[in-house]
Amino acid sequence: MIERLLQGDRRALARMVTLIENEIPQARHYLAELHQHTGNAHILGVTGAPGAGKSTLVTRLVRELRKRERKVGVVAVDPSSPFTGGAILGDRIRMMELAGDPNIFIRSMASRGSLGGLAASTRDVVRAMDAAGYDPVIIETVGTGQAEVEVMRTAQTVLVVLAPGMGDDIQAIKAGILEIADLFVVSKMDKPGAEQTVAELAMLLSLDSKRKQAGWRVPILKTAALKDQGIVEVVDAIQEHRTYLEESGVWLQRAQRQVRSELQVLVIQAVMKSLAANVTAEEWESFTDDITRRERDPYTIAQELEQRIGLKRK
Amino acid sequence: MIERLLQGDRRALARMVTLIENEIPQARHYLAELHQHTGNAHILGVTGAPGAGKSTLVTRLVRELRKRERKVGVVAVDPSSPFTGGAILGDRIRMMELAGDPNIFIRSMASRGSLGGLAASTRDVVRAMDAAGYDPVIIETVGTGQAEVEVMRTAQTVLVVLAPGMGDDIQAIKAGILEIADLFVVSKMDKPGAEQTVAELAMLLSLDSKRKQAGWRVPILKTAALKDQGIVEVVDAIQEHRTYLEESGVWLQRAQRQVRSELQVLVIQAVMKSLAANVTAEEWESFTDDITRRERDPYTIAQELEQRIGLKRK
Image (cartoon, rainbow over all chains, first blue to last red; front, side):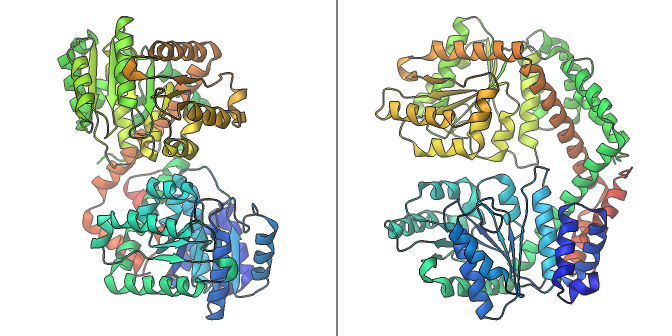
């Protein structure tokens, strides 16, 4: 299967993604083998509030990238995306268009609750697509929750999409998305209020002094995706950002930070599994009862749990 | 020190809080002893956007609670709060007023970056105040980031404060605060637009069907704190919520959920410490380098890290 996946076989890739999503232990084994064949794909994150125009933008970006003869992967973790199934008919039709192309691989991910689980499985799916020769791989999320921000950290280039006149979007930006945005796209430039949104955003960016020092001026791109306006410029800006990342050394820095965070998440997942394997449900219940009744204290019980999983202190 | 703290000695409590904040290992030992003397305090969370009027509300609530002869603890983790030092002169003067009363204990917490660190140390400080006889203990945070939402989970009763005409607040609510709110307070009812904010909020709540099943109708309380209007009603509603929690069994359910989450956080903190103790900075660097160079894969390295800390698989 690994051999076929590396040759770009779509069925092998689809099977691999299913193994990852279902958390089949064998997936880790395969992913470990695939790792050496990864690192070629430019990983793009596209985020923004529902209704901002993300899905339309992604569809048009994919089409433009195909014109440039790129093999494109899409991972949709956005419940309002046509790729995950939450969107209106027009969006679905556009998506169907793409799905017929053998050089486009689209996969949607369910939003799961576990600690870092969604970010981890998204990263693994991206890794599989990367190994299968897809470049770029686009991750689409809704930019609100902590889980989605975590997912965006997997990306090397993050696009934040805003629609004119949506107070929501500017709010979302304040709430933590601003720091992770590498490019802004104001969609629906044919709608009223579009220039005002651009102006507000430019002001917000001018206040962000940390950015200026980093050597990359976050551009504000304007699109009217349904009219296919501005799409070429967005794809060009994405390419410029990749060049910037590589030349400045930021690409490597980000990769190293991501690796470190991935290692922590993998260890924490292993700890959670070990706790589940070494502590029964009845024991959990009696531990929590003892603590709520004030018969025992949480620090002592935590130490007992640490012993159960074998944790070394020093 | 423990003896004196349990007798309500303020200096012993202040020293204990300092030990917690500085993460002195001895603090855990003391907290383990204190645990059996806790569980009496009603833990209130007060959150809302900066400028919503949280600090003024908290000041007035404390004053009303003092009239009812309660010993009140305040933990401020809000950078815009007068308790932590970020507010305007008028707020500071009101806070100074409170600080002179021996039955009020106020402590501010620095916002730290570590995983669950702020929530954990806030919980420990609340525990110390609880053991020292403070009831209620009020935790004040700004309701935006994930860290603050975590902190709010420590509270048994969560008040979300909104000011009229601040689109910000309704946004903050959508972004995850709605689920954790037990009471809403619309402040500054003497300002224009106040009734509209109340109406918007009522509508938002009426759409939240999960709430209706839970047996507690989230009230929307109206205050004009500077004129001391509505404060008595807020304190009464807080008391009603406590009665509801106890009679419905939700008090116990929440306590058990919190205990479980605290145990997980304590174990994860121990894992992070064990990683720091058993893996040198040079080793971390060589691990991340090997992975980014594709010489080794993260899954294998994570297993090596698990072995280093002694983690049992089964």
